[in-house]
Image (cartoon, rainbow, N blue to C red; front, side, top):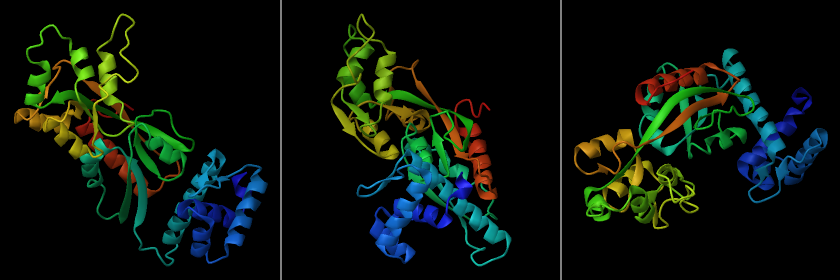
Length: 313
């Protein structure tokens, strides 16, 4: 049981994970590296599990991630208790670590944080990650909450629907004229599959997903990836949109970011009747406290206004 875990060993494991090496953890804890190693080994013996992969930097195993989550939640409870008792550090702001995808961060998420009551002293540590991967940061215990595309709650977390973020296939007018103009016998699938494409990074599958929705050959497929191998990788939301508007390639642009550029004539939609909707969810620790609860309500309220469909639960 977690209550039987020696807290000094639990805290030591967390420090090693955060600092990346036994030597660095020893410096933070003001003990020797040997003492740190002994504490971690003792905790592994007590749990009967390997908790750390001895790489550089170290990484928690799946079992280790469970202990790290417990350690972070325990630290949060300790800070809240000290504040309630009026002990030193009570005036320090609450630090919330949140994982959020780049497109949300560039559009609706920061306005959500501005809705949190000003009387709550909160500092945010935002981790930018693809919505398909933010849940992993929760599992690893690196964040307390996340905007994610996964409706399946991470162990120890609650989940609520936020709505759907809509993406539209777009390109600059010149790009569209070059690749679509004068080709009446060429299907849209063939064009976007061959034309240069802009992607966020190597894990960005949205453009490929769009090509797959257009169908393929007789077997309904179109290659392994879908979109063209001629890819520009632009790892910021704003930079991605500008790259598409500059004519570097076509891409799936968040509708909210595309709207002003479409109105100004800098972008055109490649298929006015087609889009991809990505469902977003808010996951957070079930260990609730005022600051996290306030942020959850603010995020949900902003999502109701900014995302298609808004919260469904």
